[in-house]
Image (cartoon, rainbow, N blue to C red; front, side, top):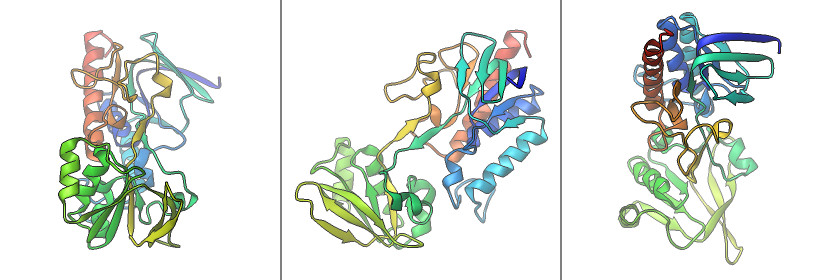
Length: 311
């Protein structure tokens, strides 16, 4: 290894949670290192416009916001390493994290690796992300006010997204590969009874249509194989998220979906290890809630270090 050093606090992951944890830990003079990852900044790096984060009345792009978060953390003395963590040892403290070029040990570890949206897997879907394709109705729904929209999925999340979008959309079409929903009964009833929500049953998205922006989707019938085009100007994919916890399986207590379990704030099943942001939050998944939990994790870590006589 080209580098090996010890820190009181090490943060794995960036995004609003990781960078906020870094800001608080750095201001507490804990000199944190942030192993931000090659794809640093989290899901906000895929978001063109952020209009619901307090303090930005005219909105801000996701990458610009993450650049500001990083600069603020570095201003107070945090060190940001744009590499992926390749190995984590939780047999501590001290805890150990390796990257391609460095190895760190730390008295306290904060996990902020986030969660990744599951996508359909189409080239056109990837090409039109932030041009009408999104995985977050709360983030992007208002950008398409007065336009027809579609939601892919059949669970509670999809119904929540569809119901939320009715505030802005002229019409919402829920695209589901089966002839019945997987959502809870109450969510099904709300969606089925809503005058603005239609359903495309037994259908999958075969192609997202549009050159610069989404103009529609081509649907394929899963039974007969026939196709038809549905004109929409926004497509929201709501088929779930995958928490980025592969490095921590077998070391931290995870729920059945793979999210890190926390208690008493941000404490995990391992003393001295804390989790914040989407990696422990399957419910809200917002930049502002991730940032808030990052603050909590840093404060929890600082207090824990003080209790151990390490602060």
